[in-house]
Image (cartoon, rainbow over all chains, first blue to last red; front, top):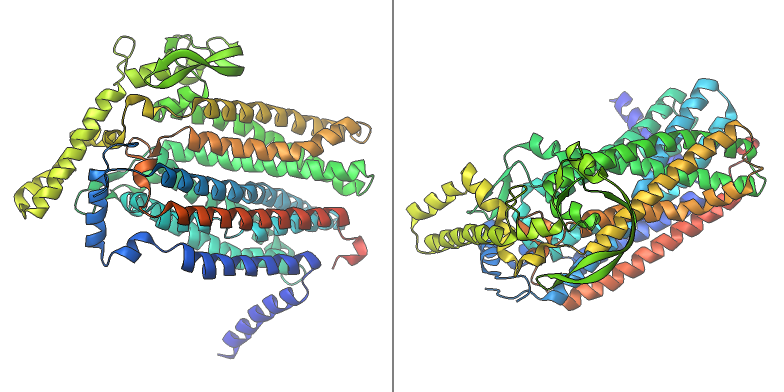
Length: 79
Length: 524
């Protein structure tokens, strides 16, 4: 058990020291990564990119019926 | 029931996807190429024990890190767009598209959270050998990660290894290996990663040339140019070879795209390859579309026939043959005929839908089985997408874009072979600093290699229009029924976000390049 926790601690310290001793560009890169991930997952994903089929239909049966309808009723490209 | 397709919605959805993909691709090829160059440099450090190699490796690793950090996760937005803007497509492709993307996601996650961390944080904390292995694994892992994306993309260009199930309205994978070893996927993977290697090499040669112009970091710059020059030269030859293999495959599976990037309208034997040319609209039309003609061209006689069929007498079908059909020289179905067959498959699908509605289980099962029959798949279902076309000329992509993007890519590709070869020659002869013209040329090659790389994707994606899945689904049928306004809003958001990321990358990178590598005494 002690050996296991020591390993976990070593991994933790590896990352901790890595982040602590990070260079100028590394710190800026991490700020950009965090801001970017927040924008992508907390803003874009939630507010702008809902899954169209999940949002509008309850189950896969409804979804497949809808798509079947779409691909058989779209007559021509530019009508 | 939707009878009409809102073109502005289709156009904005396409524009948004193109914008995201183009920006995403600014970051990817440098990761692919630079990771291998760094691994080679670190190998030299471990082999020789020379601290200058460690310093050189760490410098390029810094630039790799900036690019990696800013580019990471930009591709996820493309996956969001599939679910929101392209739901018809996403459902229709089923697990064939989802499986490779999921593998890529898992691979990228493990790669990024473990070996990249060892690469950056592990100096002096893990053994030299383990650090080196981690660096190589990052390089190999980045290419493997790209493999799965390219497998998914290749399936769109040449759908194989699946059957369509009318009950689920999805294509279902029946042969994973056929999808993985799709000839388009193999060619695309080799061509794309080696072009990434070339881009990384030109980047290293260009940045090193900047130092030599400034009379700084001579040791690092010359060694970097030598490594990148050799790696880039070998990569560029592979790019040419794999490009040739790609073209041969395209001639078989996407013949209209192939004919479009050569603006080859009249099918013939002893067909020449256009090395350079300028296009204009001619008076002649196919349906409502003007046929393109050459204002001028430089042609290599017979080479297109040799390239596609192995000898001068091979018949290379032109756009006219492929659209209007040709039963004299070779058996080519006209698009009109393909439209008929596609409509037959769609009518049968409609009949299935009605049978299900009427609870006619026997007829529904009969039709379901027809969709599994080989003959029906080969003779009818493979032309399913043609049912959506209004007229045969809709199957012609934008010839000018395909032609110019292809020729720009090829001309620049040969230019980079010369740059790589010259860089190695001049370093070995110790004449590189005296030839300042070359240093300037190498520096200005950096934006050019990005233009060439993006041109390759413009050709691949614009050249296959109108298809999102070759012959099975046109782009217009793939789009979700959402408001064009919401797509415009997210388009603007992306334009701002990605431009900010690109500006951040360029400014941090330029600052780091100006700072240069750490001095010996600063290296831990």
